[in-house]
Image (tube, rainbow, N blue to C red; front, side, top):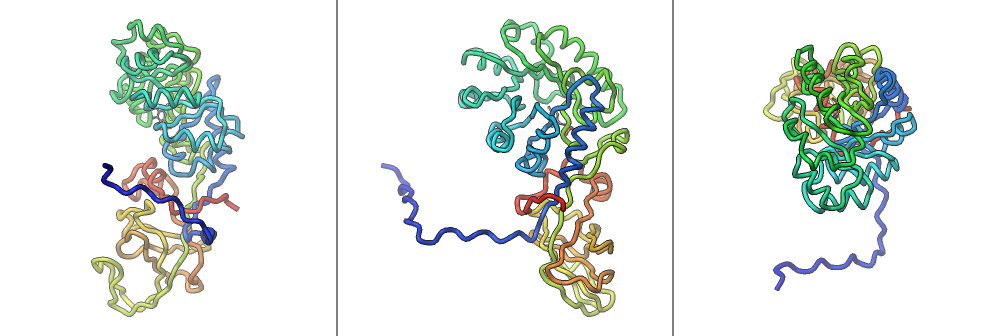
Length: 366
Ligand SMILES: *Cc1c(COP(=O)(O)O)cnc(C)c1O
């Protein structure tokens, strides 16, 4: 006997769900900057074409918004990590080339690849065998050239299972392209050997930072992620890449503090004199982590509004001294230039994007 009661059918609905009111958080996306960033990275890829890493919901920006912009700019090759990232991508762009980096772990993954026509990125002899046993067909292959994360070890390149594959794109991934280190040249040498050993229609090595390492790293297809969304992993890219994501939050309440009043959890901020503050609808549950407590900042019509006290789950308090006209309901822009914010917070630019939560309305920049 089942221990749990069957789920009742949905009630006959006499009250249709009301429309959800707009969020007090919005993520303004500069679509032109996103399109320009893809075109710049495609141009910088020389004779190679640029694809797009759109895993983790386009690095937190939102695949529904970013996908069509990338496709309309000319992007044809899309990379996700998980199989469950395929449907939202396909719903926003009916992409011709979708590769799933984590590869087929089991028969359900293989069946899903076959049903959707997306390509599994095979990462091991095990995965290659699983794919071949299911009937084979076009796939990608990731070969490890030194990052020791996912990927077939080079020692397995001669295996008959690899020779039996129909490989569209043979990939490898750089561990340290954002640094000047001999590791890059070493991985490139190994990649050149991989290209000789593995027959494939296309080869791909470079992520965003790898594109800036020069033509030798470009092969046929580059796989930028971070820089599409405004991240700058190497200074050479700074002149080509523009900020895309502008988080904004509304002031829910303003209050007047007396000298000595404490703000937020654990009373870490004491008002040095009477002052006006604003309670903003953004907290660590939205990716604005506690490292910004007392150090972060917002802007309102060019006026700087420093964060005071602890960032809490759903709220942050700002000092409104610099903006006496600022009112409840007004929108503040979060200081979130990726390079400056990474430096200020100690978070990586990758984290700054992918942490952005699901409570933002994602909207085009006016
Ligand atoms: C995430 C990822 C990329 C994109 O890297 P960026 O540094 O964001 O440009 C490219 N290739 C693989 C295999 C990845 O996992």
